Image (tube, rainbow, N blue to C red; front, side, top):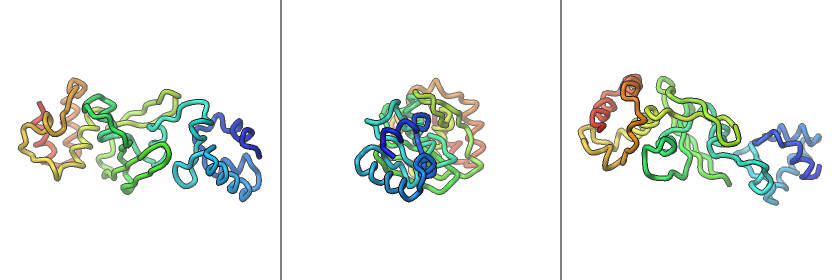
Length: 204
């Protein structure tokens, strides 16, 4: 199969696995060899073993990092620094995409960037909403309150519970008006960690 023919068949598939490619190409081994050649030629990119996308020059639309994050490792939702930046709660622009999952901690490095996943206990896996990127592809992202709580939870060891200036100086938290404080403390109680509640008591 020629690449242009293959690309036409993939118009509705922003990401595709080897099994989809085989359906288009017929003989499995022939198609796997073809995928390998196209990857070397820069026509497709491998996001992880068994998951591919057309390269940037071959795509018709943009492939967002949010959608890639959601597709690489499931279940997961974007949180921590990436979600805090999304909600404009920290001034830094975050380069890696950070997410949480109930599965083991994992990371993926590919041509689209660095994707990090932190393991969160199942009882704390809540507080996220569905969203769609500019192309209409779905992903999940933490609510502002949960993004902050997830960040504090994973950094408990480095935060002093009585540090009254932590949110202003260390975290440089801004745009606090997006936080629903009642929801914030309600969510925090579900973690069952006293230190987390004490840290939140310093929130300006």
